Every structure is written in C-alpha cells, then in structure tokens.
Image (cartoon, rainbow, N blue to C red; front, side, top):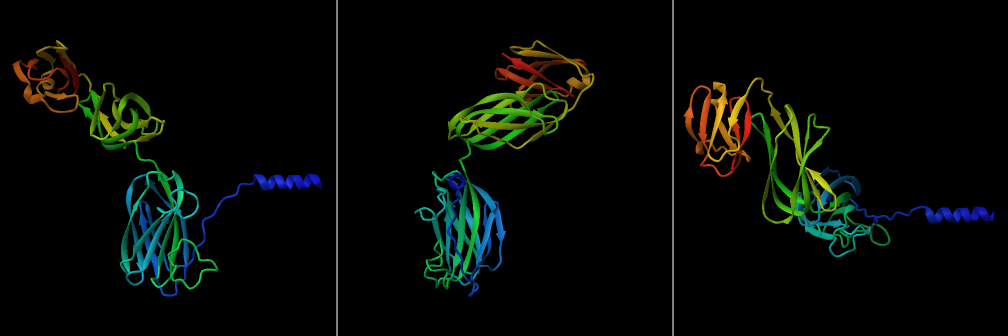
Length: 344
C-alpha cells in the first residue's frame, strides 16, 4: 500500500500542468457581433456567436512591426471594441500594453492599428478580439466578470499569433542574369542590415538539390543601401536556378526568391582574343558572323559598347580601342558566345 501511494504522488509531480487563458463569453441578444477579422494572413469570416475559437488561424508578426487589423461587425455605430494581445506570454491580458481599445464605425469596417513591442516574447501567443454593445458596463473586459457571464451583449473571438524577431536584412532585389552564354551576373541590394554575417550564392539544376557557389561577407549592421555583385564564371549549360541565402551572426538564415537562368550550349564557336589582359587595344579573330555582332558589358551588366572604338576590321579580324574604359574586367559578347577580358 505504501509503495502504491509513493508511485501515485510521483505521477502527480511529473505530469506537466499547462495554464489556460480566462474564459469570456457574450450574449448576442441585440445582434452585435463580428462578421470578419483580418490581420496578416488571417482572414476569418464568422457568424453570430457568443464565442468563437479561431486559434487554428495564425499569422506572423515582427517585433517593432506596425500592422492594421480590420474588423467588420454588425451593430450600430459606436460599439465598444478591444483587441487583447498577450505580448509576454504569461497567459493573461492584464499588462498595461496588452490592450488596444477602439470604437466601431457601425455596421462595417473598422481599422485597428497594432504595434508589436520591441521586447515582445518570441513564439506563439494569443489575441482576443471583443466587440460589445455600448450599453455593457464590462462587456469589453478580457475575462468574464465574477459570478458568471451576466447580461452582456457582443461577440468574442480568439486567434493565435507568432511573434518573430526583426528580419536581419531588408532585401530590395536579387537577380541572376546570363551574360552571353558564358557567365552569370549575380546582383542584389539591401536597404538595411542587422547582425548580417554573410551571404551564400547557391545554384541548382532541378530547383531541389542545391550547391554552394561562393560566400560573400555581409555589412554587419547598416542603415544605408548596399549593393553586391558576384559572377559565376562556370555556370551549368541549359536551364539552372540561383538563390541567395543570408546568414546572421547567431546562425539563423533565410532565402531569397529563386531566379532561373538559361545558358545555351554553342557548338563550334571559337574566337581568338589577344592580348588579354591588355592596356589599350585588343584583337578578336574568328568567324565573320561572330565578330560582326559585338557587345561589351561591365561585370554589373552595363552596356559600354559605345565607349569602344573600332580601329581596324576585316572579315575575320577586328581591333578595338579600350582606352575610354576604366581599368577592370569586361565581358565581350559575340554572335553566339561571350568572353571575359581585362584592361589593366
């Protein structure tokens, strides 16, 4: 008997106890109720009900982010509204910054601004939405009054939120552009960076299995626009895919959208280029159809052909003057292929 008692006590001590949010239910006797709630990815249409548990509907909010919740309701103008959010996840709505009051515009749409505190606890939490008849003395209280529900008119809905940290970077654009049929120019810009350690360029043949092309050091912390450029000089032939991976100092990472690139395979296209590198002039020898269609680009993809002079040309050879171009690398695109040249 003693052993059974000890075992029973052990079980009581080791079973986890989960807290619960307080109950709140209103009556719908005067037809004051919520018809739709929108916030982030939540877009919930509802019907006349005392209480609705919509905690299966969830959206992500960022710390310090500003959002607008949209509430549609049935009822006359000036009904009382409250949004309660448990920012510190202590399973109540009693802290001073966890209540957002509003007054409905009547039977229609009301905008409710929401700002996430910088110290909001990360992870899952609860949002409670209440619209109550303006004759209720305590209709918009977060919890039911002591002694029961009472004669309180309105509607209550519960939702789930996921609080996330501020994104480490604000990525303006990422692009992967083929230059001729030889290289891929990779460019991206950030508006801001927070604790950004480095970027990784990845590529794939099928969009499922990815390999690393190279890494590039990030700016760390920046509040100004930063431009980045890399070149993949040995891309896959045919269609392939590129994406940008950003990793911050604590190892967390995120991906950009995927860019598709097509590099056509060229048969029997050969151009002899010399001298390369060069200080001023460069010669191209090859098929007439190839050298008659020349374009010259910077590594960032800017067409600088108009700054290059043709000194001499015949059917199989052309000589170009590059002295108007700054020192550096350039891509010469012929009829069907491309080559990397350097002025130094």
